[in-house]
Image 1 (cartoon, rainbow, N blue to C red):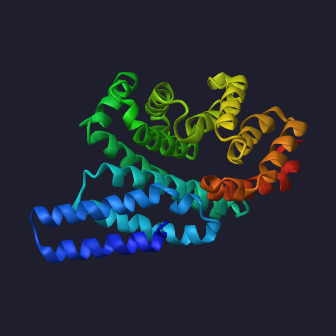
Image 2: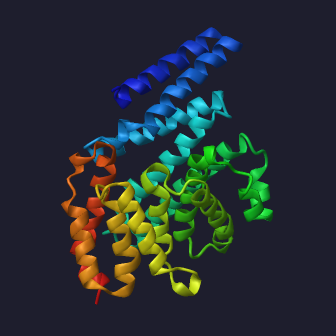
Image 3: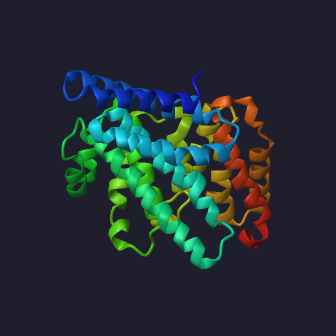
Length: 304
Protein backbone atom coordinates (compact mmCIF):
# COMPACT_ATOMS: atom_id res chain seq x y z
CA UNK A 1 0.00 0.00 0.00
CA UNK A 2 1.30 3.46 -0.89
CA UNK A 3 2.09 5.78 1.97
CA UNK A 4 0.51 9.21 2.15
CA UNK A 5 3.94 10.77 1.44
CA UNK A 6 4.28 8.69 -1.73
CA UNK A 7 0.79 9.65 -2.89
CA UNK A 8 1.49 13.33 -2.24
CA UNK A 9 4.82 13.16 -4.07
CA UNK A 10 3.11 11.58 -7.11
CA UNK A 11 0.42 14.26 -7.06
CA UNK A 12 2.93 17.09 -6.83
CA UNK A 13 5.11 15.56 -9.57
CA UNK A 14 2.09 15.27 -11.85
CA UNK A 15 1.16 18.86 -11.10
CA UNK A 16 4.71 20.01 -11.93
CA UNK A 17 4.63 18.17 -15.24
CA UNK A 18 1.22 19.66 -16.00
CA UNK A 19 2.43 23.20 -15.40
CA UNK A 20 5.50 22.56 -17.53
CA UNK A 21 3.33 21.17 -20.31
CA UNK A 22 1.48 24.47 -20.65
CA UNK A 23 -2.22 24.85 -21.36
CA UNK A 24 -4.39 22.42 -23.22
CA UNK A 25 -5.99 19.01 -22.98
CA UNK A 26 -2.82 17.17 -21.91
CA UNK A 27 -2.31 19.55 -19.00
CA UNK A 28 -5.88 18.99 -17.75
CA UNK A 29 -5.57 15.22 -18.04
CA UNK A 30 -2.41 15.24 -15.92
CA UNK A 31 -3.94 17.55 -13.32
CA UNK A 32 -7.03 15.33 -13.11
CA UNK A 33 -4.81 12.28 -12.64
CA UNK A 34 -2.98 13.99 -9.80
CA UNK A 35 -6.29 14.95 -8.21
CA UNK A 36 -7.56 11.38 -8.51
CA UNK A 37 -4.44 10.03 -6.82
CA UNK A 38 -4.57 12.49 -3.95
CA UNK A 39 -8.33 12.30 -3.36
CA UNK A 40 -8.26 8.51 -3.48
CA UNK A 41 -5.34 8.34 -1.07
CA UNK A 42 -6.93 10.53 1.57
CA UNK A 43 -10.33 8.85 1.36
CA UNK A 44 -8.91 5.34 1.50
CA UNK A 45 -6.93 3.47 4.10
CA UNK A 46 -3.79 5.61 4.14
CA UNK A 47 -4.94 7.63 7.13
CA UNK A 48 -7.65 5.36 8.53
CA UNK A 49 -5.28 2.48 9.29
CA UNK A 50 -2.47 4.62 10.73
CA UNK A 51 -1.44 3.89 14.32
CA UNK A 52 0.10 7.31 15.02
CA UNK A 53 -2.53 10.05 15.44
CA UNK A 54 0.15 12.72 15.96
CA UNK A 55 1.74 11.87 12.62
CA UNK A 56 -1.61 12.13 10.87
CA UNK A 57 -2.38 15.40 12.66
CA UNK A 58 0.89 16.86 11.35
CA UNK A 59 0.36 15.52 7.83
CA UNK A 60 -3.26 16.55 7.32
CA UNK A 61 -2.82 20.33 6.96
CA UNK A 62 -0.18 19.89 4.23
CA UNK A 63 -2.38 17.35 2.47
CA UNK A 64 -5.42 19.59 2.61
CA UNK A 65 -3.52 22.59 1.27
CA UNK A 66 -2.07 20.44 -1.52
CA UNK A 67 -5.59 19.37 -2.49
CA UNK A 68 -6.77 22.98 -2.42
CA UNK A 69 -3.94 23.90 -4.79
CA UNK A 70 -4.98 21.12 -7.15
CA UNK A 71 -8.61 22.18 -6.90
CA UNK A 72 -7.72 25.56 -8.41
CA UNK A 73 -6.66 23.68 -11.53
CA UNK A 74 -9.73 21.41 -11.63
CA UNK A 75 -12.49 23.16 -9.64
CA UNK A 76 -15.25 20.63 -10.37
CA UNK A 77 -13.29 17.50 -9.45
CA UNK A 78 -15.92 15.77 -7.36
CA UNK A 79 -13.57 13.34 -5.64
CA UNK A 80 -11.26 16.15 -4.57
CA UNK A 81 -14.18 18.21 -3.25
CA UNK A 82 -15.51 15.30 -1.18
CA UNK A 83 -12.02 14.54 0.13
CA UNK A 84 -11.60 18.16 1.19
CA UNK A 85 -15.00 18.20 2.90
CA UNK A 86 -14.14 15.02 4.79
CA UNK A 87 -10.59 16.13 5.54
CA UNK A 88 -11.49 19.49 7.04
CA UNK A 89 -14.36 17.97 9.03
CA UNK A 90 -12.23 15.15 10.41
CA UNK A 91 -9.31 17.43 11.19
CA UNK A 92 -11.53 19.86 13.08
CA UNK A 93 -13.35 17.19 15.07
CA UNK A 94 -10.55 14.72 15.64
CA UNK A 95 -7.58 16.99 16.22
CA UNK A 96 -8.54 20.64 16.78
CA UNK A 97 -11.49 20.41 19.18
CA UNK A 98 -9.78 18.00 21.61
CA UNK A 99 -7.11 20.64 22.28
CA UNK A 100 -9.76 22.68 24.06
CA UNK A 101 -10.82 19.98 26.52
CA UNK A 102 -8.50 21.15 29.30
CA UNK A 103 -7.77 24.69 28.12
CA UNK A 104 -8.78 27.82 29.99
CA UNK A 105 -11.95 29.61 28.90
CA UNK A 106 -10.30 32.08 26.51
CA UNK A 107 -8.17 29.44 24.78
CA UNK A 108 -11.05 26.98 24.62
CA UNK A 109 -13.21 29.63 22.96
CA UNK A 110 -10.48 30.36 20.40
CA UNK A 111 -10.22 26.65 19.61
CA UNK A 112 -14.00 26.29 19.26
CA UNK A 113 -14.10 29.21 16.82
CA UNK A 114 -11.28 27.72 14.76
CA UNK A 115 -12.98 24.33 14.70
CA UNK A 116 -16.20 25.99 13.57
CA UNK A 117 -14.41 27.75 10.71
CA UNK A 118 -12.81 24.49 9.60
CA UNK A 119 -16.15 22.64 9.73
CA UNK A 120 -17.80 25.35 7.65
CA UNK A 121 -14.94 25.14 5.16
CA UNK A 122 -15.57 21.41 4.88
CA UNK A 123 -19.31 22.01 4.52
CA UNK A 124 -18.75 24.41 1.64
CA UNK A 125 -16.57 21.90 -0.19
CA UNK A 126 -19.22 19.22 0.30
CA UNK A 127 -21.89 21.52 -1.11
CA UNK A 128 -19.68 22.26 -4.10
CA UNK A 129 -19.34 18.50 -4.66
CA UNK A 130 -23.13 18.17 -4.72
CA UNK A 131 -23.47 21.15 -7.03
CA UNK A 132 -21.29 19.46 -9.66
CA UNK A 133 -24.42 17.52 -10.66
CA UNK A 134 -27.00 19.84 -9.09
CA UNK A 135 -26.19 23.47 -9.97
CA UNK A 136 -27.42 26.03 -7.45
CA UNK A 137 -28.43 23.31 -4.98
CA UNK A 138 -27.36 25.54 -2.10
CA UNK A 139 -29.91 28.20 -3.04
CA UNK A 140 -32.69 25.61 -3.33
CA UNK A 141 -31.75 24.11 0.04
CA UNK A 142 -32.27 27.54 1.58
CA UNK A 143 -35.75 27.89 0.06
CA UNK A 144 -37.08 24.35 0.54
CA UNK A 145 -34.56 22.00 2.19
CA UNK A 146 -36.71 18.87 1.97
CA UNK A 147 -37.56 19.24 -1.72
CA UNK A 148 -33.98 20.12 -2.67
CA UNK A 149 -32.56 17.14 -0.79
CA UNK A 150 -34.94 14.84 -2.67
CA UNK A 151 -32.95 15.58 -5.84
CA UNK A 152 -29.97 13.69 -4.45
CA UNK A 153 -29.29 10.03 -5.25
CA UNK A 154 -27.71 7.07 -3.49
CA UNK A 155 -24.51 7.53 -5.50
CA UNK A 156 -24.06 10.89 -3.77
CA UNK A 157 -24.34 9.78 -0.14
CA UNK A 158 -20.64 10.43 0.49
CA UNK A 159 -21.03 14.08 -0.51
CA UNK A 160 -24.39 14.39 1.29
CA UNK A 161 -22.83 13.09 4.50
CA UNK A 162 -19.75 15.31 4.30
CA UNK A 163 -21.95 18.33 3.57
CA UNK A 164 -24.34 17.66 6.43
CA UNK A 165 -22.03 16.48 9.22
CA UNK A 166 -19.62 19.46 9.19
CA UNK A 167 -22.64 21.78 9.14
CA UNK A 168 -24.10 19.96 12.15
CA UNK A 169 -20.79 20.28 13.99
CA UNK A 170 -20.53 23.99 13.17
CA UNK A 171 -24.08 24.59 14.41
CA UNK A 172 -23.34 22.75 17.64
CA UNK A 173 -20.43 25.15 18.20
CA UNK A 174 -22.52 28.23 17.42
CA UNK A 175 -25.25 28.68 20.01
CA UNK A 176 -24.48 32.41 19.87
CA UNK A 177 -24.84 32.64 16.07
CA UNK A 178 -28.53 32.64 15.17
CA UNK A 179 -27.72 32.91 11.48
CA UNK A 180 -25.91 29.59 11.61
CA UNK A 181 -28.48 27.99 13.90
CA UNK A 182 -31.04 28.89 11.23
CA UNK A 183 -29.23 26.42 8.93
CA UNK A 184 -30.54 23.53 11.06
CA UNK A 185 -33.35 22.61 8.58
CA UNK A 186 -30.76 22.32 5.78
CA UNK A 187 -28.59 19.99 7.85
CA UNK A 188 -31.60 17.90 8.92
CA UNK A 189 -32.82 17.56 5.33
CA UNK A 190 -29.39 16.42 4.12
CA UNK A 191 -28.85 13.87 6.88
CA UNK A 192 -32.42 12.58 6.63
CA UNK A 193 -31.89 12.06 2.89
CA UNK A 194 -28.60 10.22 3.50
CA UNK A 195 -30.33 7.95 6.03
CA UNK A 196 -33.16 7.30 3.58
CA UNK A 197 -30.87 6.52 0.64
CA UNK A 198 -28.21 4.33 2.29
CA UNK A 199 -28.60 3.99 6.07
CA UNK A 200 -25.69 1.56 6.46
CA UNK A 201 -23.22 3.58 4.38
CA UNK A 202 -19.57 3.54 5.44
CA UNK A 203 -19.83 1.02 8.27
CA UNK A 204 -22.75 2.80 9.89
CA UNK A 205 -21.36 6.36 9.86
CA UNK A 206 -24.86 7.78 9.42
CA UNK A 207 -26.19 5.74 12.34
CA UNK A 208 -23.28 7.00 14.42
CA UNK A 209 -24.20 10.59 13.61
CA UNK A 210 -27.75 9.94 14.73
CA UNK A 211 -26.63 8.45 18.05
CA UNK A 212 -25.36 11.90 18.95
CA UNK A 213 -28.11 13.86 17.23
CA UNK A 214 -30.95 11.93 18.85
CA UNK A 215 -29.30 12.61 22.19
CA UNK A 216 -30.45 16.25 22.08
CA UNK A 217 -33.26 17.34 24.38
CA UNK A 218 -36.58 15.60 23.78
CA UNK A 219 -38.16 19.07 23.74
CA UNK A 220 -36.06 19.72 20.62
CA UNK A 221 -37.05 16.44 18.97
CA UNK A 222 -34.43 14.10 20.37
CA UNK A 223 -35.14 10.53 21.39
CA UNK A 224 -32.95 8.32 23.62
CA UNK A 225 -34.78 5.31 22.21
CA UNK A 226 -33.91 6.21 18.63
CA UNK A 227 -30.33 6.95 19.71
CA UNK A 228 -30.18 3.43 21.18
CA UNK A 229 -31.58 1.93 17.95
CA UNK A 230 -28.95 3.69 15.85
CA UNK A 231 -26.28 2.57 18.32
CA UNK A 232 -27.40 -1.06 18.02
CA UNK A 233 -27.20 -0.93 14.23
CA UNK A 234 -23.79 0.80 14.27
CA UNK A 235 -22.43 -1.93 16.53
CA UNK A 236 -23.84 -4.62 14.24
CA UNK A 237 -22.23 -3.06 11.17
CA UNK A 238 -18.81 -2.76 12.83
CA UNK A 239 -18.93 -6.12 14.69
CA UNK A 240 -18.40 -4.15 17.89
CA UNK A 241 -14.85 -3.27 16.79
CA UNK A 242 -15.30 0.49 16.63
CA UNK A 243 -15.05 2.53 19.82
CA UNK A 244 -16.80 5.71 18.72
CA UNK A 245 -20.42 4.41 18.88
CA UNK A 246 -19.87 3.49 22.54
CA UNK A 247 -18.40 6.92 23.27
CA UNK A 248 -21.22 8.66 21.39
CA UNK A 249 -23.94 6.85 23.36
CA UNK A 250 -22.13 7.53 26.64
CA UNK A 251 -22.06 11.27 25.90
CA UNK A 252 -25.46 11.56 24.21
CA UNK A 253 -27.57 9.41 26.52
CA UNK A 254 -25.77 8.19 29.66
CA UNK A 255 -24.52 11.65 30.66
CA UNK A 256 -27.88 13.29 29.96
CA UNK A 257 -29.65 10.59 31.98
CA UNK A 258 -27.00 10.90 34.69
CA UNK A 259 -26.72 7.10 34.48
CA UNK A 260 -23.30 6.25 35.93
CA UNK A 261 -23.66 2.50 35.45
CA UNK A 262 -24.51 2.86 31.76
CA UNK A 263 -21.71 5.39 31.31
CA UNK A 264 -19.08 3.16 32.93
CA UNK A 265 -20.09 0.12 30.85
CA UNK A 266 -19.98 2.02 27.57
CA UNK A 267 -16.62 3.66 28.29
CA UNK A 268 -15.15 0.33 29.36
CA UNK A 269 -16.36 -1.32 26.15
CA UNK A 270 -14.78 1.48 24.11
CA UNK A 271 -11.44 1.16 25.90
CA UNK A 272 -11.41 -2.64 25.74
CA UNK A 273 -11.33 -2.61 21.93
CA UNK A 274 -7.96 -3.51 20.45
CA UNK A 275 -7.23 -0.86 17.77
CA UNK A 276 -5.25 -3.46 15.80
CA UNK A 277 -8.25 -5.81 15.59
CA UNK A 278 -9.75 -3.83 12.69
CA UNK A 279 -7.07 -1.87 10.77
CA UNK A 280 -9.62 0.22 8.86
CA UNK A 281 -10.86 1.61 12.20
CA UNK A 282 -7.43 1.92 13.84
CA UNK A 283 -7.02 5.70 13.71
CA UNK A 284 -10.68 6.34 14.55
CA UNK A 285 -10.40 3.98 17.51
CA UNK A 286 -7.28 5.66 18.86
CA UNK A 287 -8.98 9.06 18.67
CA UNK A 288 -12.23 7.77 20.21
CA UNK A 289 -10.34 6.01 23.00
CA UNK A 290 -8.52 9.24 23.81
CA UNK A 291 -11.93 10.90 24.22
CA UNK A 292 -13.16 7.92 26.27
CA UNK A 293 -10.24 8.25 28.69
CA UNK A 294 -10.90 11.96 29.08
CA UNK A 295 -14.58 11.28 29.82
CA UNK A 296 -13.67 8.57 32.31
CA UNK A 297 -11.23 10.87 34.09
CA UNK A 298 -13.84 13.66 34.29
CA UNK A 299 -16.89 11.56 35.12
CA UNK A 300 -17.31 13.27 38.50
CA UNK A 301 -17.86 16.56 36.66
CA UNK A 302 -20.26 14.98 34.17
CA UNK A 303 -22.43 12.80 36.39
CA UNK A 304 -23.29 14.16 39.81
